[in-house]
Amino acid sequence: MSNRISKAPEERKKELIEVASKLFELKGYEKVSVRDILSEVNGAPGMFYYYFKSKEDIFLACMETYFEEKLKNKLDILQNKEIDYEERIKILRDLIVKDISQFTTRYNFSKENSITDNSYRLWELIHYIGKFIDVYSEFIIEGIENKKIENSMGINRENVRSFAAFILYGAVGTIYNDYIIKGENKTNSSEAFGIISELFQRPH
Image (cartoon, rainbow, N blue to C red; front, side, top):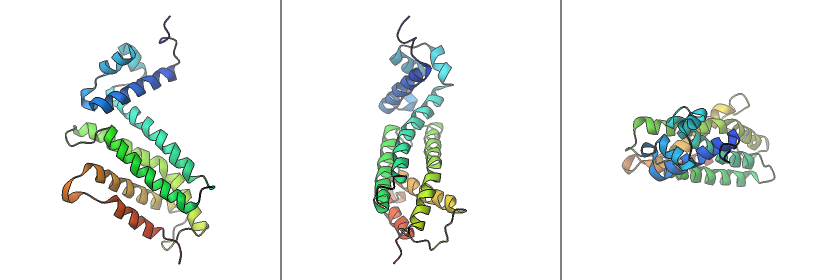
């Protein structure tokens, strides 16, 4: 019996995702086939379809794995109260910009891609933000309770989640636009962060 056959299911699934991620980054989604992925791991079609329904399915899994790694890092920082509140804000902004930049490069957002292709990318990006909202909401409440940020808009535990979602989707959307849009319709993420800073400015 070969070592490959004896691998645990989760280990083998992880291997497929890692190989597929490298191929998608190198060749682009459209030019990678299930056969290409299987060739890299010396596997049979039945093995692939045991874990994934299709190429689209593993593509989503690759992006989700990418974001899960990035998400854990951000959540750890936001919840680490040993780091100064203002410093956590700065770290978070820098990480979000870096992650979106890497994501758009690694997964090749381009108008040349098919509508379906780019739709998968956008779906995963939106899904990623959704997982971040609850912890970010608590971070906002922490800032209000400790008088680190102003609360001129009447934010409370009942409405903070909507406020957090508005900020996150707006910020990430602006950064995303920064990296994929050219010309007069291009936005400026620095200006967006400036607006957020105005919303979150400390009491005078």
